[in-house]
Length: 407
Image (cartoon, rainbow, N blue to C red; front, side, top):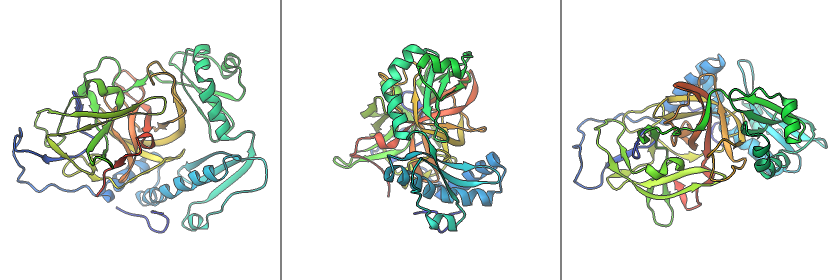
């Protein structure tokens, strides 16, 4: 697994700016901008990782060297947590990566019974301790089933609820209430007929990030994909912007000219909010713009599956580049219009003291280094003040024939 042994150093659619994705030169001679005579600098994954390490170091008051070490191990930690969930579904209650100034470790919770933890000595040997407890009252799978089954009734019983998720660090179900609500955890438990409820209060507005009648120039494009059957190359973005997604403009150099996009498909359901488009005027390449926005962009190399505590970054038209920690990989948005009907516990929630989220970031890439995790859906924000909570759609809900475009 990458990162175990060595640390690697190192649009717009009718209004969506091309922030997340790289398009190559025109595929035909009719173009509004002439050929470039300059040599563009290539943003390698190491450049992205170094920028990410600077952000992580600021978040947790560690050195950049330590930040690079931790980020280099994070993919292996994510894979380990996923393997525990798949191997022990009848015992697994949650797992997370602990990130503090003094501690970097993986924690795994199981229900009572014999010890089942695989010590994974390869991770421990390179400085990633793994700790397990066996005191959970119920499994994570049962709590997810409960929230998916009862969600519709809970929304009716508690209109102030804008989201919920099972806390992997305890047996609680976290209920997120709208800004201004001051209902207590006990009152919420009574309203929903539950125990073990913890209440969080949203800050400001909660919604998809192009909501509120904003011009579609506020949206953002994400990563690129290829259809394994037709070999059509497309750019992915948020499906909730799709009705008006018709054009894009190059990120840099920006010529102010908009080019037509062809709608090819979308997943807009209880599990995801992703659409993909063809770009007949330009070649679609296996790159995206992240922290390094100029030149050729960053080469995308693989998909990733986050865990609680994963430190990820996103790029958005409005707020540019920022990073944060995953707080749930089973998040259920319940605000009006979040999904065509009710959402499942399929989205990812991210929080960061330095994370930025505003309308216009929809569709942008969530990633770490050259690994793609999903596309931005929405979050919390207060007017023009960026919010510190964001949500994204997991890539894994794309149709199986849509693969990440790589070299």
